[in-house]
Image (cartoon, rainbow, N blue to C red; front, top):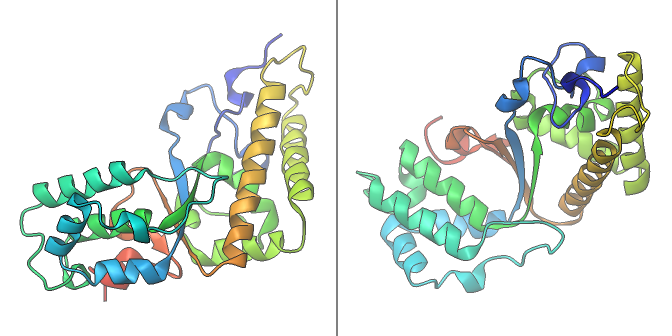
Length: 257
């Protein structure tokens, strides 16, 4: 017998009970899963870019003259293509009335300025990592001091600091294995099978958890070994609420004092 959809575990629900975290329910909540997105950002370069005027940013993107200064990409991870980000920047500037009134982007106080700052942070990224939000509970919660409370926990610098510290005391294989074993234990606690003959999604899901947890370990290890800053956000999140280092973009440059 094939397991019911609520435990096929492509994504997962944001359940209050620990054993239920990461499991799909029969109401179809998987349709509402959103991606949490991490970037490793060259903060020095980003500070240089936001010190430019919007006109200077627009001219540089149109002339593709910033490509040579973009930090080298980590080949193990995806990141946005030059041409795609250049197009997004130019489109945003063209469509945003009032953007460009300050002598530098950092001095501008508007939602459009925050969106442009986020695009420039993505330009300064060396690596990007993406995961459904509910799955991320499985990867972080066992390795931090207290349970995570909702999606906004992934925008908390302290959570990532604790997680990074925990990972520094183990290796990639051990961490990945512990994630898979924890997932198996949660299934068994819910009375669900671990037999591939009874649930054809067991092995693909196990491999997915292994691959994602290993790549998460890699990006956190790169963060510890570099001078990059971690930027964390999610799909459909307002630009100003993205976390960069210890602050949000709004706290750093714009709408909050």
